[in-house]
Length: 202
Image (cartoon, rainbow, N blue to C red; front, side, top):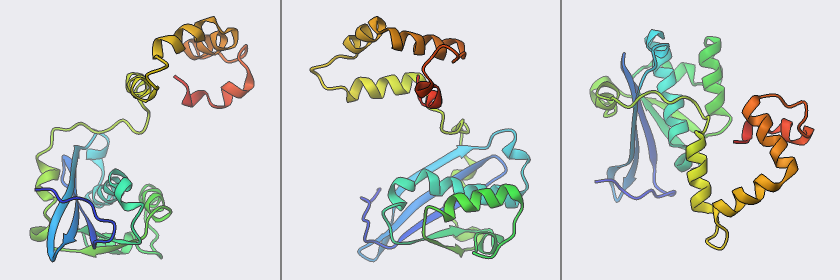
C-alpha cells in the first residue's frame, strides 16, 4: 500500500537503470517503517539505449528527481539511492564528468538538496521497475495542445464557457493575426509582444 506523503519524514529516492528502461521509487519512513509513496518507470528511447551504463544510471537519477520534484522541492533534504557506486562521485560537488552528465548533475544540484547513497544491486528495489516497463520515453516538456485545452476547459469558471472565449477570440483582430502566425509560423505581421512568447502559445 502507498503511504501519504509527509514533508517531515525521512525521504529516499531510489533509482535504477537497465538496458531498456528507468525505474524510481519515492520512499519515506513512517512510524519506523519504510513505505513507498510513489512509483515511476519508463522505457529508454533508441538514443538513450546507446548510452553507456554509467550515463544511463546518471540519467535515472536526474529523471527520478524531476519526476518526483513536486514532493522533493518542499523537503530540506533527502537521500538519492543508487546501486552504481560511481554516482557518489559524479553527483558530488567536485566531479568533472562528461558534458552530457554534467548538464544532468547541474539540473539537479540547482534545485534540490540531496545526498547520494550507494546500495548493492540486491538491495535496490527499483531494479524490477527499470526492467519490466512498456511505458514509452517522454518527449520532453512540450505540452500537447489537447492536454492544454483540457486543462483550460477544467480551469475556466462555470460562468464563462470555453466556447464563449473562442467565439470572442475569433472576433478580435489582434488575436486573429496571432492565430494565423501560430498556424503558419510567420510572425512578421504579428505584434512583437506575442512573438516573444510564441513558444508558450497554442
